[in-house]
Length: 415
Image (cartoon, rainbow, N blue to C red; front, side, top):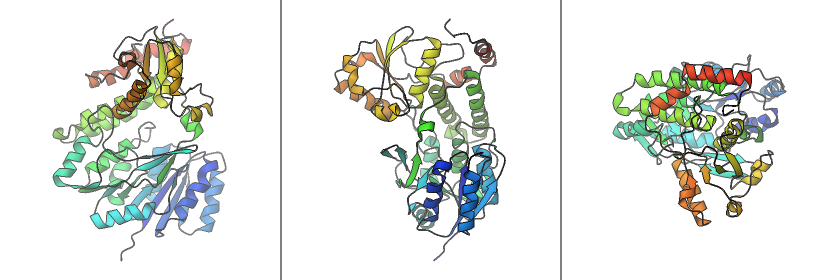
């Protein structure tokens, strides 16, 4: 029986609290022919010491100490040092169940797949949620693989990816991954996984999709609570992703409509991170004029947090309440979030459901309807018609310059 070497690359930056759990979970994998590469990306905590300690305990572990360069840079460094036939990534604050790598490798061996795409488990404090890909399990090649390419980034109903963007819940053949990972612009710090995953999938002859959820994505309290940085700084960061992926998409077969898929992907990130606002201070995403209305925000995830933050800084709406089914988890982070059931005691004009995922929005709508809320009061994001125009508006140089001047002067955008 063939036991190919699997290189497990762990990018590490300021996560000393979680790093031991991560490394131990890799060491204890049922599949033992591993090369474990710990990439210390210049953190000033005890992570470098922890890496060196583990390296002294297990001959399979090597350590790269490098100046801080970001996640893309760290992954590149680990990949360049790797020698395995297959590559697996594990973020340093996550962990994997004992059989994770063996399960993916077994699938790769039996199917001949170039990439194996799994699901994952999202751990938020005491709650865990299993998430799988929109594409059903199976082996994709020939015409079925071509169908996968047509919906891998955006699978129709705005917005959900056909295959999850993440690199860490996948097993890659090194030779295919190397060609794409090394090309990625190291300045990309938003959506960087998608800049690798989708170009790699397009180079595959065979892809396996499985429902394994043994990768545990730890949603830390400090990552759960999103900082609202300046609009201009955020837009400039996102532009690196947009520019890189659009240049890639333009070189691909037009029948795959990858350019449109990339627009969906980047626009969804822009909507979430900017709370739906354009540089011109228009608020377009909820289909009705919410200006100066009394609103309730449903969802305390990234979109919800940014929506609340942008509303407060702009004075756009009066926020009556902020609701989430997991309200107690967000209260731990000192967010003023209440149970969804309290909606029945409130007076408001609209409820804004803060998600770009239509399936998630429908669940929230049904939840509210069950509580007796009229459908006319519930707003979800309107599906953009001219997506290219809209996304370019986010990056419009003149508009961003005006916003930058306001931010520097501390002028409220609705003053």
